[in-house]
Length: 329
Image 1: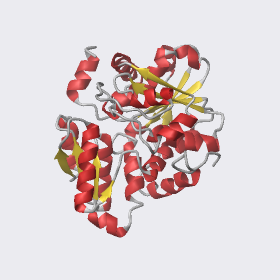
Image 2: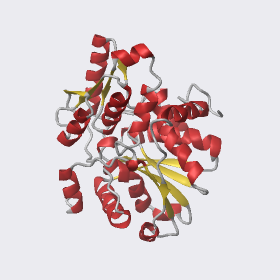
Image 3: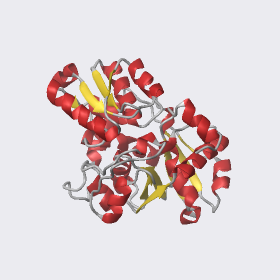
Image 4: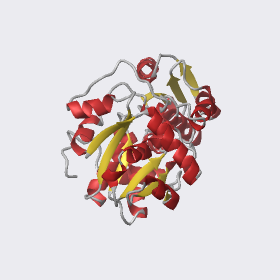
């Protein structure tokens, strides 16, 4: 590894170990290209689509969950895990818990989407509805961990989670002969840091650009300010990006490794989601369309390049999808 461990939370060896642990449980997801999508983007851009929405829970977060759960000790598995989530992290943990026989409790905000709540419960996880947003649910999860003496399954601040997220980039570089840039949505940052860890080892010329929703821009603002910042509120329909702070485990690596960090509006995310529906017939939620939204905002920046994006989170709820399709967002 070329970066000091003090600023980089995982090594490439961690990624390889995570892939070995995931192999019995997950098949690789495909990288596909769509000429009609490339034509819509223009400027000679070729978009390489990593279909993480084809995972069993329709999101890359299942990798994070399984990477963490398969690394637990037998006693930790017996006691179970607690986590905070607005959807896909909780769903991944619930799936992994059912698969591995680990009790799972997921803390969600009181206004969390009922469809995602039902999906988490469907895998047998216990749901605790408390807190006004994700960040407050994190505090609830920390309290339960202390009270119960169980493991915390944080969505980002855990090297095992970041290594799990990195495995989709490892697959991508093995599947894509050419990859000039990756544009990756940042909520907590596990995707982006995992991607940079792999690319430094396997494709050192490939750069990563981070993207956040303009209404949930804490990590973006922190990156540009070069110090961790917290925002009092978030406002975006992209649940996977709705965090109020940059995370201590990933922020130093984001600061060091990202080529650039941009924001896109909810309207731009919705437009990208509609384009994905019409050109690839692929359904993703807001966070999963953010990478394409960033490319569409400035396609000339990627002219003539092969650009990887990650389509993750096929769990958009019916009301939000209806609003997107009707161009109400």
